[in-house]
Image (cartoon, rainbow over all chains, first blue to last red):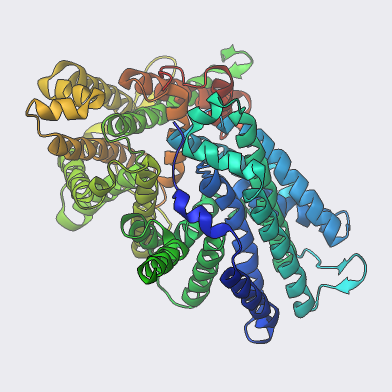
Length: 326
Length: 295
């Protein structure tokens, strides 16, 4: 049995219509101007997590697989990139590339095991393997255990762009995010993506049509892991550290929340969800209110009251209004 | 001093005992998960939180009401079971018929709420809870000293597991439960109140977790995070055992607990991951789990 999460109707919104183009242009202008209005580090954090959530959404939204261990790829890549840049003195871009490749390799390993079971078991297996990876990170020497890798130099991108300048760092992060977002869009709207959606809707039928669904699932898993790694590696350079926080199950839970809150199976949803959660955490950081409780409450409310998420509900609203006018 | 495989015998026995104790908790928790999943088709992520709530209920009864260990052994599961049944009635029951992943996400959110709230009130450091006077001290078994409380935990958990198994396999209530697992609609047509059965089952599963929490309180400290790391290991245990059989869940729990203990003796660095490694191997060889049926 395949697991249906996103509603098929939502996918039709993914095609680029004229209002969508206008919206995209507006959003791009907003993103370009943002660092002059808001605190750049907060924005960069949002972009990294937005990319992470988009990568996660590729699996849950378009293949119907709930991974509870995506922190492995995010945090793992952060370690790889941080180590390459700090200890080996690599160029940030080369470090990022190593992070992505490392995350993809981890994704191949975890995915190979996890796709042997479906639905709820898939979630439990990815969670358990993620926990195993976190234990390994605690023990191997290069991650420096509880301390993590601190003081990662931002360096010069390709030896040219000084990333110590927050504005330059912001635009590089934005470029990485746009690249990742475009990659997800391309994957979802490719023939490959259509087969993924077919597997999500009816796995047995896809098998009977002659598709080797396991290969497609594994392919999607590795792509999702690689993109999560891109987000994690970027985060390591932006914040100049990589720690255990990024590989633990709480992080896997957070990315699920961002995607669920924003809208599973929508392209823009994970971005909205990530921005919302990061803004909330930033807002609550100075207060004494326990963030975990609030995250838990949002989870419960989302699951019980609006399973389509913010973007999903807005699209549903627009669609209903449109059909009324017609 | 005698040695086995070059390891001093007392160290070996000691680790096997610790393994048996951990295994007791794995068995109790995976048993509750299997019971809940069998009927509700929900993976109860809040199981670890309910285990923690059980320990805190015992701690609270002792510190605020002066009620000691023995009554707590009954009262704490009743309290947690009641809370769980309220949760099932008000929230979980709305999700039946939807994708089972939503049940997982809901209970995950609940676990975060409980853990976050208790961490806010009690901090992350553990609260001590002393074992009852009757069970303190140790007994010399000839080959090792056995702390009486630890021996009690192993025996008590065996009895509880066996009792639950008998309840499900041999009683009328258990037969309703098994029948509803097979075909809920048909059982409802025969006049059994299935929604009430679902509520009771969730309460029973949570009560088992709480009972494990009370048993654990004197061994591990009572802390808000005691359940969250445990539950992930229990998930791996459940994947290894497969959720098809109650007895399978119990046996897998004990065996993996002892295996973890033995790993501590022979290669301590791997002890925290050995259960996950076993899970990976089982997935490669027998994806449905050792006792599972291919769905």
